[in-house]
Length: 252
Image 1 (cartoon, rainbow, N blue to C red):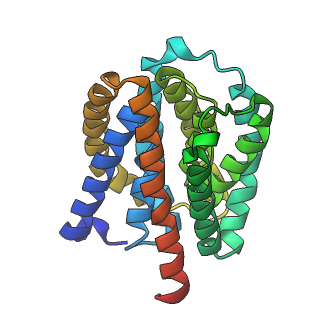
Image 2 (cartoon, rainbow, N blue to C red):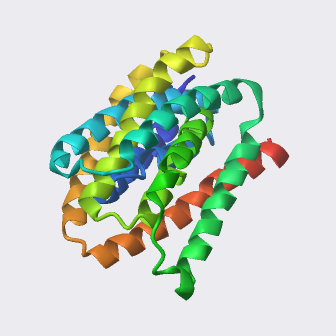
Image 3 (cartoon, helix red, strand yellow):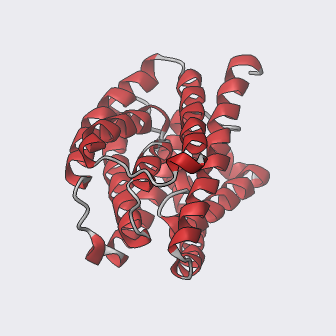
């Protein structure tokens, strides 16, 4: 792994984590779902997942502390418990199957959600709290296999019409738990790259700088604007795993 010795690749990683940090600060998600696909262009998915763990955990802990007064989210405990089991299954899938198919299916699923959400008849619908454990399990499985639970959890939480503070706390809780679990799970499967810690330390200041600027931007958003921005970011980031999956299948 030569990312530290390649200035161009390192600058791309810094930019990805800075922009991802802005998204994270403004909306509560966006750091791994932007940075991981970018890094998989030049490195394997296990390397990208290993690098993402430290920045994801620390930025999310910072947000959890900031929004701790908004932790009353009814479906969140069951969502997280189910997600923990799903993550273990997803990590086993990472070690055994071609994740390109998962990435493509995941991107298509998110785009389908967006199409449904943007239909005028669908706008007033509200998500179902009783489905929290099912979406939590799916989010955990996706995180364990691709690191992209941000394309599962946030759409469900967006459908619940959570206000920004609760949305940020809920997504932060999900990312913190999944990332803390992912390191030992990857290590037990022989997929964790220890050199990734040094890369994480290099890009960490850029992630936090983005988090700060994103927090300033997000604090000024009206609720309707926040909802539209979430949908827009989901649409853009859903394309990245589809691109990576197709590239892995047909061009590598």
